[in-house]
Length: 170
Image (cartoon, rainbow, N blue to C red; front, top):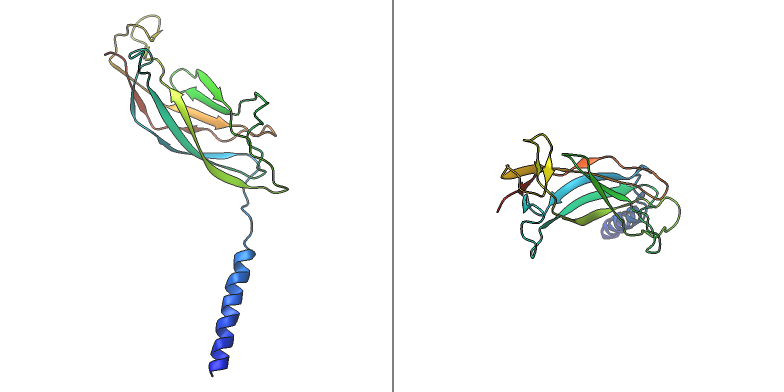
């Protein structure tokens, strides 16, 4: 009886260890997929309101990429993170860190955090919108639209941050 129970326990332990090493790698699509996670704060001062203490936010999002080809080496100036201001579609670009390929089928996942400097309030109450000047509004609200592109040229889905309130006046 003891030997039979011991045999069953050994077989169960062997099956558990074997199953651990037979786990299939992730099956991500070859296009990057991103998901918004957070912004470090929901309110910031308009650019120029405090020249000696400029404001910024940290935007965090997660990613997956089925072929693991994100980022470019330091020597390559190619940008692959794209931010657009949802109010006027004005954009900025950043570099993704290089991910070294480890062989075929390198599905990867992780999180990326990017610091973005403050921007300008956009006053649309007059004939011509003004920015970072004396505006008649006290606050403005924006969201950032974000995409990434891998080395093969595959572009991710577009995500949107939560709303960020800009303080326009001191």
